[in-house]
Image (tube, rainbow, N blue to C red):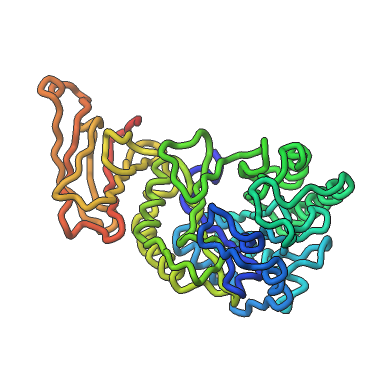
Length: 420
């Protein structure tokens, strides 16, 4: 078992200097991409990178962000130390294209990692393998447009390749030695080069040598401790550890023109669906150019905090619950099987039914948000009624006053536990 198993909910933070301009992170620089429909498409490379000279997010408060994450029931947080556009949000000796050389000056990654640990959260670092600013990658230019996923920018010389890999290893070494224990490394951008170009085996040896207990995602080709479906909940659980990363609207970075916000109910329901399939939900926030969170994100985090305070036990430290035929909704269970959590995501007419469970071992049914004990009835076939431990169905009455406005959770307790 790892801390990642049953972590439940995490916070993703996408942010760089272009948030001052209200631009989606990195992608406007190359003219947008099909996967992010809200990304601006008519931005030049020079315009995108121009705000690095003026970036001064005086409302950035890492401690406040960490408190919001903890209140919302998050157990880990991942920060974009460097996105594809190449601007480092940490102090690096290998480049002057970093937060250190802005009017703000402070090391944002250091403040983030310290604040999250102070609130008891695990710490993750996002790091783009590609770098559209670096001279040896080589940098993306207007002449390289339109961007073609997997083919831009063009390859440089062998000498440039060697120099860039040295730079890549150097920045990874900084991130994995200067900021204490890093629990998770979240790569991205590797699609731009063939697997062997990145020399992933060398990178993995370096990473695990510096941080032996670290988890690495699946976006360094051929390496990966967990898979990362994006903006999507798989219909069937992927093999092994996994995590869905998701935005609150359709953008990863601060984009005020994108008003397609998911409701707090939608986000909570997504969390229930993911954890019932054995995954974690990494939910994104995107600070503005001042460093503050947009009001719509603060509002949604607040509602999630309310719901998690009442129902967090049903999505943290749990395992997948019943099969779909047993209950028409997501469900989870405790490790010992003594409690099954039923996530009632559609308003019941009067009752919910659970099938294929040991009905004589049921000891209680309760709406955990309201604390209301619920009435239930059991049923088996006539012959099975004579058995000592029959499998049957239980119908749980759910009165209107027991419902939660976001998602109702029923805890069904079993004496001696159940194997599902």
